[in-house]
Length: 143
Ligand SMILES: [Mg+2]
Figure 1: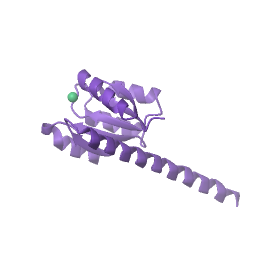
Figure 2: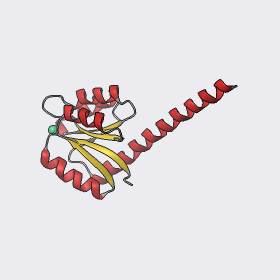
Figure 3: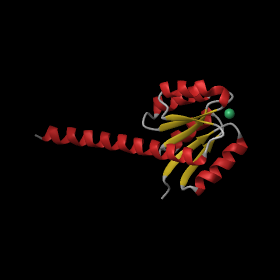
Figure 4: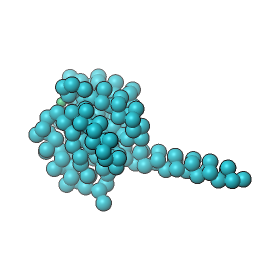
């Protein structure tokens, strides 16, 4: 079983290809998208995605817009933003919009892996809490 199901979104095809290889070697299951709309389509089709690694700078729907849509439709999916040196500010804005964290490109693989692991742990914990709350609700109704 993979460590996590991850959707990688970036408009640079060689970057996506290289990262997919590297992250797959590190036991992640990677789905990829090359723009914001494609990312939303993939999320719609594949509900097993737990973490999205999202490029800030993309033509058309940019990272911030894509992030907003993802958090609106799938609030439990965690998003890690990838920013360039010139767009660090947008990483910070991303945090305000609900991103889990942001990393600067080119990103260190160990650092990215630890962020992904933290993000997926947060998501799973969040889901467990929701299940627990629902169970409490059900059992309290019976009394
Ligand atoms: Mg880009």
